[in-house]
Image (cartoon, rainbow, N blue to C red):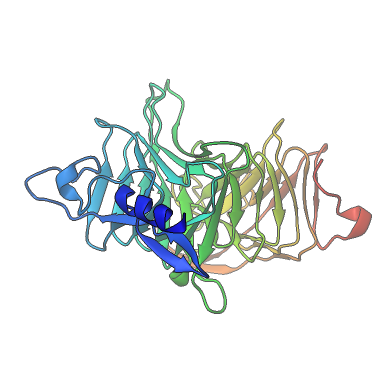
Length: 358
């Protein structure tokens, strides 16, 4: 019977390795190499070594190659990606992970750039969809959620990272650092848009676009850091906390290099803001440290703004003005915290003084 099974699998074209006497399928791969006779699109057969990727394959895009999932073509699927170059998701979906029940854990590598482009004002969005438990590990890799400036009468449009099969789908961001976690050996999720999928941040999540209306939204499913990770606002970016965030991740708003002495807030990229908005499900109950060293101290420039619910951590608060070098003269940063009457912020708390999120 075992011999019959082996013969059947060979006929079906599966590669196998034998581990402890058990035959295990090896993930097939296909490598992108842009054929200059065609556009550099994902769905063009001639650009791939073994056909267009599907939900059963590892898609390899080497350094120096740029591949586009173009909005004129269909959605894209891969079990994993190995990205050294650039992959652009242009108003389409890219689905990663095991898409067959029982959804085994899978791992992709991003050492290059995955750009999730913005949607349009007709409700067409670019989405990264996560199926099952999917880890993305990187060495100086970037997942950039892009933005698009709308007409004045339109709402901002966003890139989206979302679950594919169920609310249990999980995205894990990880690094290759041997010691302290840094961006040089880590993976950074940056930009503006909505992170709806359940997320375990063991690397870097960074709000870095300087516009109050273009936030990086942590929304829908819970977020955590089960190992040291960082939630960062820089260059004037805003991170909106609209779901429960737990774990040991640190929170940092640390830029001090404005282009002038903070006389003008908009468009100069001074630090950034963590906000738990009105009437949201946002809540932080963690153990990480909070570092606030940026900001201009203007009326609407707060580095931590808790409008509802709570921001609580057993970690330390470092709240400090620093001297920056900007424009014609140096200036002193002026970080600020604003907590509304029905909300609360706690630091270095423990026991009953540091309640979990409701």
